[in-house]
Amino acid sequence: MTTLDLAAAREALLGGVIAYPTEAVFGLGCDPTDDTAIKQILALKRRPVEKGLILIAADYSQLLPYIDDRAIPQDKRFQVLSHWPGPVTLILPARKSVSEWLTGGRDTIAVRVTAFEPVRALCRKLGTALVSTSANPAGEEPARTADEVRSYFGDQLSWVWDAETGGARSPSKIIDPLTEKVFRHNE
Image 1 (cartoon, rainbow, N blue to C red):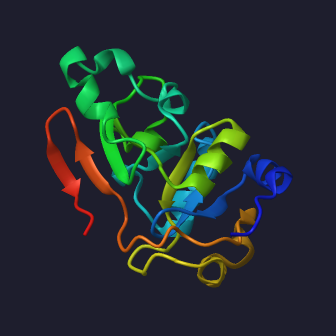
Image 2 (image 1 turned 90 degrees about the horizontal axis):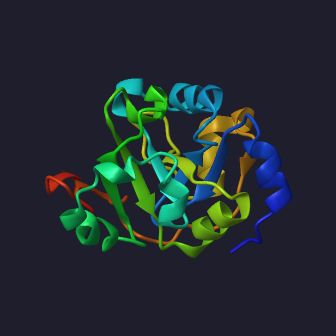
Image 3 (image 1 turned 45 degrees about the vertical axis):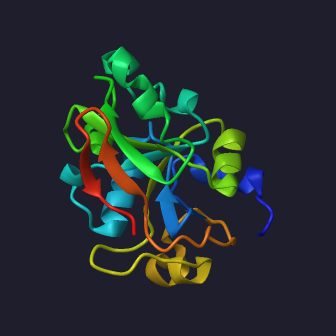
């Protein structure tokens, strides 16, 4: 694993899009409060805004600015929190202030507390959750190396972390723990 250049990552996050390894593939990310950078990710991926985006974090507290925590019923809290840290993305109620560029215009948001230590360290050191979507244009295979990220996006990214993914075969499972609906399985 190549050492994290925190200064470069922090600088790149100011108005830019970064790429970093996750459990299975490389992710494209940005500051979740930066609508311009979010729009850049959607354009790079040729992804419709209606699909929404995932946020990845080191811990639940980094997600609190985006989740309407009060809307999670008390009897569902254990079910919600028992999935993390790990490769499970949850669909949870979003705060009304969260950008529709993240939610896809829905009243929910997709979030994950990762167990993959390099990304946890990145989020901790940057002090924020990150947008996290696979590093590939729509219809293409997700990038699994920094070189593949560069072949897809060239110099359109502010920073690419030259490090290895966690080696998982498939992206995170996506579920709504309040309804128990599964949106994506991981094999």
